[in-house]
Image (cartoon, rainbow, N blue to C red):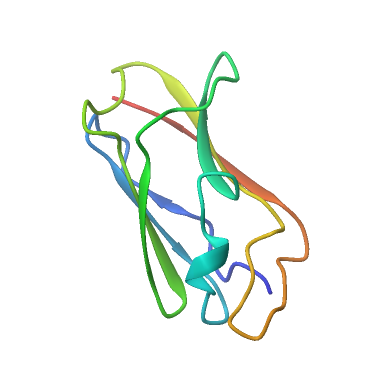
Length: 99
């Protein structure tokens, strides 16, 4: 399974990102261990939530939002699978900065 596009990221304090894959995603494989965000110190950001529908995963900011001017990295591990049980070919990551 491949991501058909880079993650779509809106660099705002209360940001949500949409990840589009080339196959429908098994929502049971989308967890805080397989899709997560790290701050610039490499610490996992708590409070991230997800909504999975068909080939898309929406990643929602924590309730308090992000820190303005801060850099973050979205990580998607190769443990995310399609509904047919096919894993991502490799882990992906996307850097973003909050305005």
